[in-house]
Length: 369
Image 1: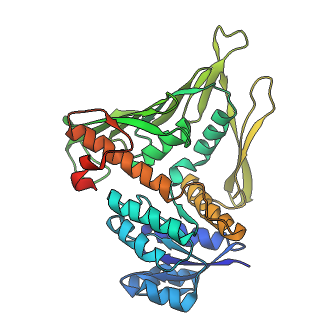
Image 2 (image 1 turned 90 degrees about the vertical axis):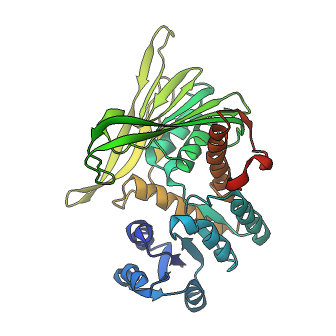
Image 3 (image 1 turned 30 degrees about the horizontal axis):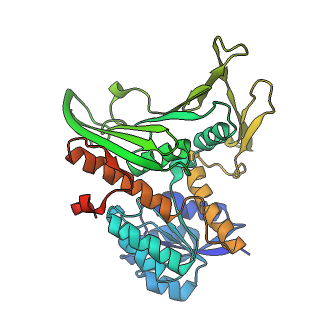
């Protein structure tokens, strides 16, 4: 029987991702209601899916009794909404960031532990097909031990932190952080992001993360990463003791270790008809080893990478609910760590780039706590 799903927050994420994904996964999920402060906005999301609209989350919970709730309110309200939703005692899918304030993150983590319910954070950037394949290949030991991970504006702030930790290993904790920020002037250029016809400002962020096992992660982001053609290709790279990778390209030693050879990843597709196709699998064939394959669990649906990532996060929660377990792949603890790393980079910058032990000393947090 499909699990009943409620959505709290009738914005772009609800309309563009969650509602259509829930409908596409009809064997597993049923959308029963959408709630928002303004019923008209909730109705605009709910009506195409023939479900109820509400102007309060309490009414949605009382009248539809959902098995899980997707919380996708406005960015600044994530923490407050998460704490309020936890009072209902049902499984939750929360948006990123968990909260911009660490004290609020702590309260969420504590309450989830007390409730003993599964709560997944929808960090889709580590669940893109290319990233899931990258994690699989690294886990197979094809490139040796990972020495350095480098994020060149592939993911902003908490997204970037999760991607770095993914490749360094979620069980390989960060022990020290250093950060720096800088604003510079660039040649005037039209901005596709905000419509400015002659944008001249650019802000850079750098983060240096040291891990317990000796790995170093480098975070590198610019405010015009998505906006200006002069910043080159966005990339998530890693360098290991036996090879390296960048985005969807990988290289290892050749047979006698005097040169390198590319480990190619093949994309397999499923034809859905009418010119529509869906990703079926990513396949790598290392020399002298069996093929390594990541299979798309949604190969019969025309999902793009973002929709696959969100759907993977949602189905992780569904599996936990059906199995009666509270642990999930990326829960509130992970969301809190990524927010604390962002804070650590900023605190270090404000202290002149001073290296800071991680987790942070609460006495240093001030306005960020």
